[in-house]
Image (tube, rainbow, N blue to C red; front, top):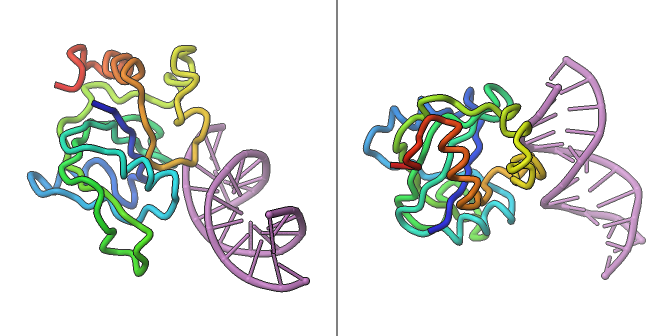
Length: 142
DNA sequence: GCCAACGTTGGC
DNA sequence: GCCAACGTTGGC
């Protein structure tokens, strides 16, 4: 069971937009970066990830679930690009700001800190547990 | 809005 | 296959 983090600019497609889809899944399309795509290729059905607001907000705002494994990106005119489908699971009771993440020595190795431009990234189990605690989800992603 | 960092493209 | 030019991302 692996954990992930998905970034999006909230004025383009934010947490509220994903929640508005309700039970409908959202194709996480538009990713045009090999590292991000390769991360999506590794995702398995039911795995969880954080939803992060980049550019504005700069905080982890919710938990999402992978509800379709990697498949061709319907918005690409090119077979290289693939993506997973996501749905919103729940909001963070307390959004976790990037500044707080950077202040934690245990989180200094996160891709979010080290490779800020990577839009789909892995999160270790330890990081996941800690971020859940910081966000007011003491029982993890339940 | 600026700019540094990074990824991608394309000429050689 | 190298590397300069260019475009994009995202924190500040």
